Structure formats: structure tokens, C-alpha cells
Amino acid sequence: MSFLSDTWTVFTRAMRLALRQPLWVVIGVMQPILYLTLFGPLLVPLASAPGFPPGDAWVIFVPGLLVQLGIFGGAFVGFGIIAEWRYGVIDRELVTPASRAALITGRVMRDVVVLVVQAIILIVCALFFGLRVPFGAVLLGLIMIGLLGASFSYLSYSVGLMTKSEDAFAPLVNMVSLPVLLLSGILLPMSLAPRWLQILSDINPFKHIVNAVRAIFRGEVGTFETGLGLLIAILLIAGGVWLGQRTFVAQTK
Image 1: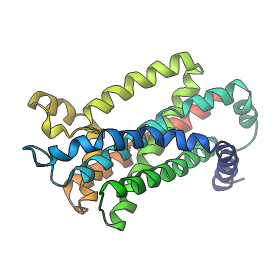
Image 2: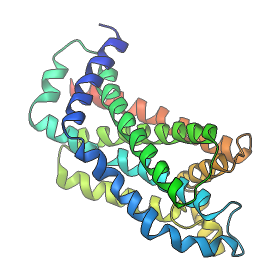
Image 3: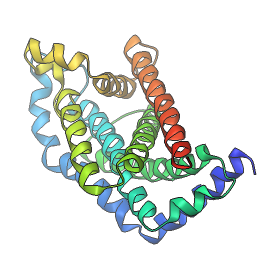
């Protein structure tokens, strides 16, 4: 069997399992929608404040929520593979001649589909609050979020298989995701922060992805900001693919 057919087999199985539990898709998007509803209106008066990025409050806030969805939507999928390993699913897959890369890529493809559906739901909800963005910008933004979510899914599955324990996996994910969230300007633009905090956030690659999606939503597609964010997203997914494949190969030794 080829890599593509193996990936499709794993993907369709994972999608069937996801469709049996559609409630998880709704639960996954509930947190961003609560932020949109209960936190977003607080930013509207701040849009005219000095230091606030160009664009209205929703063009700045919604891309941040989409990136948050991509990060957290992918970061926690490792719990699922720990459960599959415990039930022997991974061991049974590893005794087949299926490509090791396909075993993880098929699962990641399922996660990206679920993530894009959640992102579309969030954008539709944001339209009712006043978000106005060209259709092409939405598509490009979804591609960026899909790349980001895929990279986190690869990393999460890899760490899940390395730890094989929810007790070790959960604090590790929280330890990484919390500073990423606080230093990426997802909720409040880092241009409002004091200078030392801005310098600290500059070394956080996810800040540049947030800025890139915001630039895309403003229609600034060909800027350095957008290119830098896209480059970081591509490097992240390349690293995730490499680590994910090596992790699955290591399980067979």
C-alpha cells in the first residue's frame, strides 16, 4: 500500500470516530465563541486608543481567536492517542506494513478538517458582531490556521506517544501553551504592552502568525508581516511531520 492510500485509510477511520461524537466539535468551538461574546465587545472602545493596530476591533480580535483555536485544537489531541495506545490500537497498527508517516498524517488530516469546521463556525458568529473581511482573506486565513493546527497535532501526537501518560502529558501541554497564549497577543495586541514585554513577545513565533492573520484580514496579503507568519507556519509543520514520523518509527523498535 502507498503512503496516500494508507493515509486515506487512517483518515476515514478517524473521521468516522469523530462523526460519532459531533458534540466534541461544538465543545471545542465554545471557548472561542465565549471569548467572542463576552470579551470582544470590551475591545471596541480600545480600537481608537494609541498603540492599537490598524483595523477595527473585530479584525484584530477574531484572527487572535482563530490562532487560539488552532493552537489548543491541536495541542490536546495527544490525549486521544494515549487512549488508543492503552487499548492496543497503536500496537495493532504497527504490526501492519502501513507507512509510519501515514499512521500519524491520517489522524492529523482529521484534526485539520474538524479545526476548519470550527473556524468557519467562529467566523460566521463573528459576522453578526460586525466582522467584515473579504472572502479571499477568509480562505487564506483558514489555510494559515490549518497549517498551525496540523503542526500542533503532529507535535501533540508525538508527545502523547512519548509520555504515554495523561498525568505527564497534561501539565506539559499547559506549561507550553500558557506562555504561548500570553506572549502572542491573541487576546490583546502586544503593541499595547510595555516595551520589555514587546521585546519578550518578539521571540515568540506565534505572535508573528497572529500578526500575519490580522494582516490578511486587513487585506495586506503581500506584506513582510504576512510572509514571515506563513514561513513560520510552514517551518512548524515541517518540524511536526519530521518529529511525528520519527516517533512512530521509534515505536516499532
